[in-house]
Length: 87
Image (cartoon, rainbow, N blue to C red):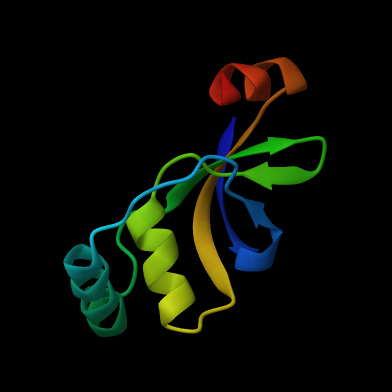
């Protein structure tokens, strides 16, 4: 089951390095300030910890805006599923 929750940015682990386009991040920042985030980021919840592998531009926009929480589509997963994402 997937649910939408606002999760503190400090609790979201981003284990894979991502490159972001500064222009896209700035455009998202403006959009988020004007109309809010339209699409939550995806996170896996594994043993009470949150991992994100996508939504890097949205995540970075929230960081740069100084927000402390971000809407997330949360999917519970096992450590085995997490290992697949890290492979």
